[in-house]
Image: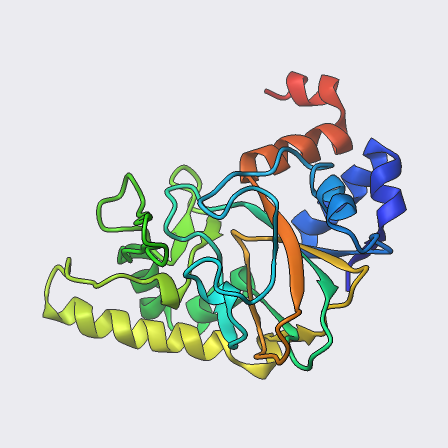
Length: 271
């Protein structure tokens, strides 16, 4: 797996550039030898940029205590998904660092959403077109004082998104647990087309060949591209499983990556 040391990232901007290039290339990276404290984990994430604030706060540090009405705060298995699909601008980068766990289970799942999309396009072009066109409404309303939905795109966004100027695959936004009631169909045929396409998509995401499972370990922080890589977990036992982490905006990630790999003069020259 793509891995870099904590000391390399902390020591210099060159190390940051190597780290962010790794994330850009593979969709994720492991930072080994990360001190097993929330303070060190927060320092690591802030080597990219400021931590994004959401309704869950900024830097998070939690156990499965249902502090928030979200499945992340339970011990149940989570299927492959991307986070914050209910924001107009979903979180770009996410970090998860296991600080403690005395129980069993809880292995991490990663799936490359861009690869899954290419497989879908090759195997079922019609399904690919459907999931690139049909808008999926999403929401977050687990907390009594919150009901978050995208503020633009009245009926949500497609699961597979493309750059409107180039047509390049740009973003996967998929969390079936965040999906709202779908009523904005063009016609009855679109209903059938969508659910057939969704079944094909789910079938690809759950293929053993596309799943990467591994145990989370204290000292090995996981950072991944939330616009590309879907994540999940196995069910687990024990109420002391403690995870910390946070989000960074995608634009801030790209800014930091360009500057630490190319230098400011070149970045400005190429504007």
